[in-house]
Length: 292
Image 1 (tube, helix red, strand yellow):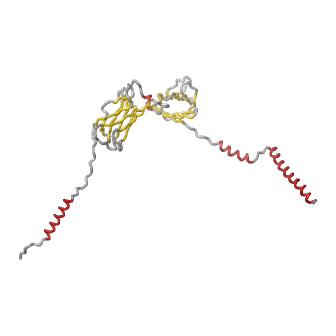
Image 2: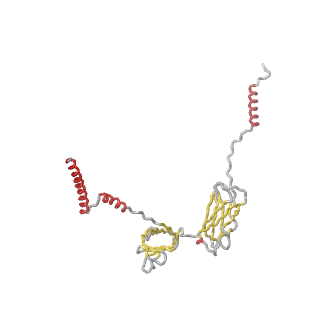
Image 3: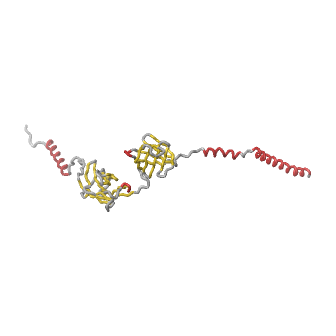
């Protein structure tokens, strides 16, 4: 009985000692400012993640300037990269009451709507012009339209698959006429009438000018059909859809067909066989009389 009581007393004492040791360790860590190992292991992963740099996204704009010169502008936020001839300018956006102005301190790019120019940067904004008259190759928010129609002719002639139909939308207010839109259609397995659509930008048109559609058909570069009348469209109350009848000015050359060797018919074959048999009989025939 006494032994059992001693065990009951000793066991709680051991537990108390172990608990005290654990509390002491925790207090020691707190006094020295050490953090649990799990927190310090997570820190390197977070640091590595923050070191990843995101790629810069650039928006590209292509311009055609005076004399057909090409200019490219790349935009990202307030930064611009302007490429002209053999130079590339890295610029920052600056304050401007009119348009988008970017400068590197020596050269400035002014972008206004669908146009812009490049000039030397001076305090009075009167620097030497480097290139001007720049227009976007693909205008922003451009309003568009289309002239539609069909191409046909009256002759009962089939065109070969390589025939090409060329349709043009022309500004005929000036001489020579200016091409506004053009479409080339390879015929393939189709025949007339053939439909077409000529898109245009409304900024290209002037309500006071005159516009017309012309068409022609060629085979191997040879002109076969052409529109011999003026099909006016768009302005002055003219329609945007036309049905064109072309006039024939050339002929379609048919390629000669190769002929197979002539084969004899049944009667001819029978006659030839009989002739051959007759000739053999003449050779083998025995004469009726002999002479000694």
